[in-house]
Amino acid sequence: MLENKAVIVTGAGGGIGRDFALAMAANGARVVVNDIGASVAGEGKDAGPAQKVVEEIKAKGGSAVANTDSVAEWESANRIVKCAIDSFQRIDVVVNNAGILRDRFFFNMSVEEWKAVIDVHLNGTFYVSRAAAPYFKSQNSGRYINMTSTSGLIGNLGQANYAAAKLGIAALSKSMALDMAKHKVTSNCIAPFAWSRMIGTIPAVTPEQKARVEKLKRMETAKIAPLAVYLASDASQEVTGQIFAVRANEIFLMSQNRPLRSVHRSEGWTPETIAEQAMPAMRAHFYALDRSQDVFSWDPV
Image (cartoon, rainbow, N blue to C red; front, top):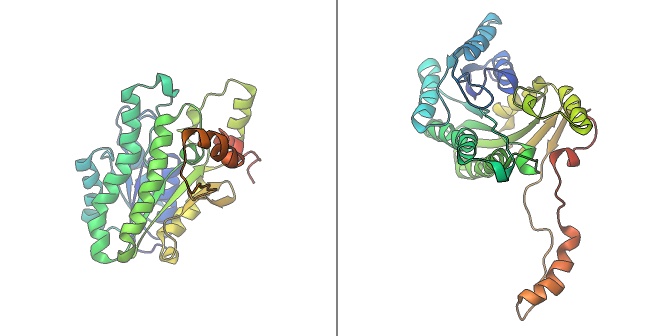
């Protein structure tokens, strides 16, 4: 489905990103395997993971190059896109997958932990996407595939930085879809459920936590790749501005914010009438403080 297309996959040295890179290459794409080789917390740098994936692709007859530039800075993000242009003379698909975790309850989170996660996830998605945009516009085609998370779409404990970045990515992706539509460029999000190196940092102390981790282990990262390949292909031209979730063999189309309920008073509102009338009328439609596992409460199929 991707014959001769040039694809960038960030954070492709392992986990979901690695499976994306392998699947894209298996479907005919030429792949820039980007990964700085850092820890889950974003520390350190190692060219090994990206190069190993490149070698896997080449061993199967595919075409790929390794890149170790960071998505978290504008200049290095531009080098990632330039790597595709220099190597393959074009860029057709950007998969914004790179990510780190710095989990901490909001009231204990440091400014550094906040900024580090925002820089990689949200700023990184913007930087790489923006660097590719002139090429997409000039060729009147292109695909953005952005990784969001139910941590932001629904909620999770101890992930204020990650949740904010991931919900920000969903909004950014929609804006990209709107702004690039006239250039026949699409932009969609995937929220993955899968056992990966990042998810492996989830605490598993209580019986509930241990049960959740065991459930996650049954969801393979490779299950996410077919949707990414489809969204990267010409077959997905009419699919844009959407948010999908993948959980084992399930694919979900996620809702987007729309009005649920309205109340009005011709004479206007006071704080007292809001308390007496507006809130009671709306209360049945309030959202609970759900977490992702509360909403997706059944076992993976």
